[in-house]
Image (cartoon, rainbow, N blue to C red; front, side, top):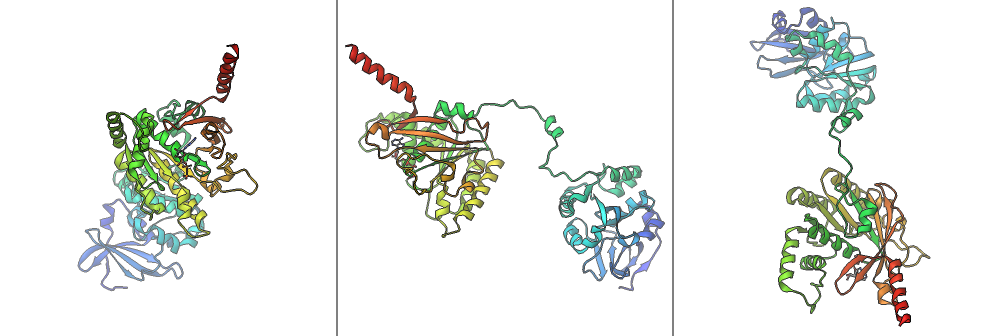
Length: 491
Ligand SMILES: Nc1ncnc2c1ncn2[C@@H]1O[C@H](COP(=O)(O)OP(=O)(O)OP(=O)(O)O)[C@@H](O)[C@H]1O
């Protein structure tokens, strides 16, 4: 301990409205050090109760600590009985003195040894002391570092933490303003900590009421009816056997979003490195033309116009064979925040699993899906992602029209858990009749929005001359056929 410390009188603290009695009780002094008038806070060792360190506060508010600075206890702890019902903790020594002054030095109050940044270490070093109290009231400064430290303290303390708030920067300011009467009620009214992400029902009630609205339409009216449209902050999974038309369905939706809704879309087509092809097939769907097929006939002026419109609303990721899950998350953020993309299409999620070694796929998928979900809930975009299916022994092949179930999705639950809707495409690519080959059953496997459309199927028909998929009613198609046959017979 330095011997150049000279104890002085307490007049200086009277300016702060703190009495000599309070200072003596908690171990706070005024003295001289290196020819300067300083404040001295004594820190007593939790084991021996003898002063282990002295914190010297200079007039310019800088500090130095003399003595043993390892595992510093709370300032003032030795004043009180160990343990009890309530303990108040302030950020600094002067605030602890101020609270004690307001309470006539009757109830336990201590302070952090090194301000807001010392919460974690002090709480760990003095856990046994904190464990002795039933309720711990945090009364840190009313500023940003104080808020951050409050959050940290409450997280460490758990259910027994309470937060006391004063309409002043700190307890000493309340004292100086002649409002020491606010300190005791603030302690009694201390509330459990409420982070910014937790809202009470009343707080939600107080925000403006928003009527439920329809989302944006899909390219298929029956799907819009079944889902009430597509909404931001939702994820939609699409699964089918290989070659059944998943990418084609995404392109149908992108063409609809750009052509009808004028919305910006972003693609991650991890199996389509040819970005011209992506652009041209989408433009083709807008105009119902096969722009990407050599020799097909179309109006060149229209082609250029549509291509430009699609290009203006499309952001495309160029796959380079080194795609990491983290990159995708980062580029989605960039696309949404930087380029205004409102719809993100990821084809396909199973790529992420395939890219890692045997046995690690599921863990990687789980953490990627979690990352996608967090991003999707944070930023205003809709995510559409494609998944491959796993083959089940004894079941009809998915490539030959076999019925798809949720369980068939590669990665199982991890894959579909966060999705608001899960869709499946069923198509018999080996059907003998061309017409049969072009039919797809679009099945809704999961509906989180109302639950009512789970099990709904929509019939889609692919027109190879236009490259478009459209909804059709198989029963009216049968009626039409029967009508035609009847007309023939009548003749
Ligand atoms: N209902 C359909 N009838 C006939 N052909 C279709 C149908 N849907 C898509 N196609 C065509 O089949 C081909 C394969 O479709 P697509 O690439 O969309 O399948 P996928 O399920 O994404 O395949 P993969 O599993 O390889 O990713 C495309 O040329 C597409 O135009």
